[in-house]
Each structure stands twice: as structure tokens, then as C-alpha cells.
Amino acid sequence: MVKKSYRIWRLKEQRKQRMLDEHFEKQMEEAVSPEAIKPTAKENADFIKNVLGDCADLVTRSFTIGEEIGCAVLFIDELVNKEIVHNFLLRPMINSQEKQIGAEELWTIVTQSMVEVGETKEADDLKTAVEAILSADTVLFIDGMDKALILGTKGWAARSVSEPRAEAVVRGPREGLSETMCWSLAMIRHRLRDPNFRVKYFTLGKRTKTTVGLLYIEGISDSHIVKKVEDRINEIKVDGVLESGYIEEMIQDQIWTPFPLMQNTERPDSVVAHLLEGKVAILVEGTPHALIAPAVFSQFYYSPEDYYEKYYQTTFLRFIRLISMVSALLLPALYIAFVSFHPEMIPANLAIAMAAGRASVPFTATLEVLLMEISVEILREASIRLPGPIGPTIGIVGALVIGNAVVSAGLVSPAIVIVVGLTTISSYANPSYNAAISIRLLRFLFIILAATFGLYGITLGTMLLILHLVQLRSFGVPYMAPFAPLNLRDLRDSFVRVPWKWMTRRPAAYRPSDTIRKEGRNEHEQTSS
Image (cartoon, rainbow, N blue to C red; front, top):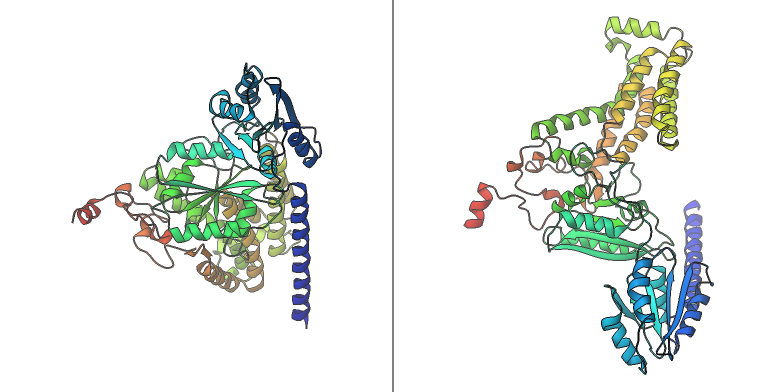
């Protein structure tokens, strides 16, 4: 009965949504219909003013050429490069000495010699002209012409290229992607000068009209993965896309998982490295975070510096990150299990010291851990939201003062402060922010399991976690590759990295069309034969 009621409610909601979508489309069609260009520039300018509600930031410049042909230039203030509009469009046309000239002849002169703007195209209807103006282009109307000229004059204020904030750079380029997608794409093209590099554009959001770019290398990326990503992007029907996180959640294979199934990065060198492995990247206008797909579990514990340093240094650091991941996930749960269920497994001297520290504590070990973990999470979130210079100071001072105060007051034992401190430090060793959040969330689940069943609960939780990870897919790629299914060749670049001269092939999990990354002796012999 409940299932049937839910199905009826769901059908009603879908019908209601369809009606709203149809109403919106009708409004848009009435407001901006694909109406033909009107006979005079003034009529076209008035039509666009009416469609945009006579908004204050719409700039209209009307003038005549040859004392009889009217022209109108329209653009949105602060979205265009005014120097281009004034010096290479308005000034040549207004100062034109053309006399006794027809509209057709004027159009030819304007498009071929007078206007010195690099990017131009023609519009056959007013809807296209309105969309161009809202996309930061400039539109030119001329009396007697049944078409308009769209000029690429984008030039809004943007943040300059700077070092990525979410990914610390130890070695490598110190420039991060920009909120302006053309700048981000330029930084990627600067590093990837391959003629097979492809970019496909999409427009998402019925109201925001956000530009989204799909990047891949033809001949390396698997065409089926590219097609799957492209189809899922085309299926997105939403009124606005403001950040790449919207797309990430809408196109990933499974939403009921705490683990990220796509990686995001601010580093252009990281984007290029993933493209060269056969993956695809997604850029979104308005955000510096690029999405990488498909993704596997192990790549969230890699850093671009791993490939810039010596292989033995990288291997050591990856083992440190692996130990940190296990500590961040299980350390508080193990403390609860040993103290509450298995005290006989603790060495005698350590057990006596821990018992002395807990003698005056009024809370159980589980409540003690939960209070400290929640306090650390609150402190961590507060330090992020505070202004830049103050945040780190408050985080360090707050942790020291609060930790010392609660131990002195006898509310928690010194051992739990050490455990929570080590857990917090371990969680910071993860190079990926969204993967670290997943571990932080799962840590509370393991705390509850340890408080309920002890080490048996931790073992059960670990088994369920592994089963969950094994069944995950990212655009058809097994999430636990190259461990499950096992691929011995790809283990060369997993939690261990071998020297570059041995990594001759791209990871097989991403099914690259061109598998050879570096020609070694065996590959060269196969090619010659």
C-alpha cells in the first residue's frame, strides 16, 4: 500500500514538473521567439530592450552612416571588453566617410574591412541575437539588413592566475585553473600541444546557460567512455549550473556512496596527466575545479608531485598516505574496542597508565571519543570559515587550549586526546579533499560499530566496506582497479611507483585506444616486427 501511494505521488510530481517545464518553455518562446530580424536597427534595439526588461546594464549605441543608414550596437556593460568595442567597432564605423552607399554594400564593407574584431558570425533571428548579448558578445544591427552581426568581445573582470588553494604545490607549476573557462583551456593547451586534443561544448541550465567543456584526446581515450560522459551531460535538465559539483552528482554512476566517483582538481598539469592516461576532463564556466572521469579509489591518494620526484620517494610517501588513511579511519574505533571490549590485548603497563588517566573521567570511552571527534570537526569547520589570516591561528590555539582544558578538568583522558590528535593529523595527509571527507564520515560509522561489537564490529565494517568498494563503478571502470580485478602490469603505478622507464603502457582499466605510453625495448621490437 505504501509503495503504491509513493508511486502515485511520484507520478503526480513528474506530471507537475512537466507542466512547469512546458510553461517555462512557453514563456521563453513568447519572450524570445525565433523572430526574423526587423527592417530597422531601432526596431531591433527596442525589441531586445523589451525582452530584457529595459535593464540598466544593457548599453545601446545608435548612429548613422552616410546620413541615411541607421545602425545600433548592443552589449551588456562590464561583460565585454570595452576597448575592443570602442576602438575596433564603434570608432571605425562612426568615423566612416562612406557616402551614398546601400545597406548591402555597407554590410560587405563592415564585415570585410571596417570592423577589426577577430571573432564574428551572423545571426538570422532575434533569439540568437539576445542569447549572444547575454553571453557577453556584442550585436550590430544595420537598417535594411535581415541579419545581425555578432562580435566576440567577451572581457569581464576575472581573477588572475594564481596558485591552487585546495591543492598544495610542493614541486611543479604553481598556477591553477581559472573561473574563466577560456583561460583554463589555454593553460591546458599550453601543456598539451596534440592536434588530437578535442573539446566539445555544451550549454546547461535553462536559466544560467552555463558553458561546459568536455576534453579528451582522440586516439587515446576510449570512445565508449567519451560517448557515455557526453550522453549523461546531455541528459541533465536543470534550471541552473553554478559549479562543477552539480554535474559531478548528476552524471556519476551511483549516488548512494560516500566515496567520490569523479576527481576534481585545480591544477592544469594534473588535468593533462589524466588526459594522457585515457581519461576525460570536464570544465565548467565559473569554477576553477575540473572534473576527471573515470576515477578509481587509488588515484585519490596520488599527487602530481609523485611523478616529478624519484620513484623511491614517491613509493615511501604513498605508503605514508596509506598508513594515514587507515589511521584516520580506524584509530578511534580501535581505541574504543580495546578499552571497552578487549582490555586483555593491551600491554599491562600501558593498560595501567590508561586506567589511571581514565580514573576521574565521568564518561564512557565511546562518549569520550564522540565528544572529542565532534569538537575537532566543529573546530576544523570554524577555522575554514574564518578570515584567512585568523583561521589557522584559531585552529591551532583552539586545539591546544581546549585540549589542555578538558584534560585538566578531568572530562577526558590524556590518551583520547592523543588518539584524536593523531587521527586528525592523519586525515590531513590525504591529497584529495573530497576523499578525506569520505574517510571522516566513515570514521563515525566505525566508532559506532566498535562501541557495539568491539573488534568484531570493526572486522564486519571493514568487510562491508571492501564489498561496497568492489561493486562501485565509475563510467563502467571498476573502482578498485587495478586490485579488483587484479592487473599485475598496472600495479607498477599503484601504492608503489616503479621507475618511468618501466611504465611503458597506459593503465588498462581505462581501456585506452593507444596503450603504449613510452616505447620500451619490448614494445619497439613488436612495432618493428
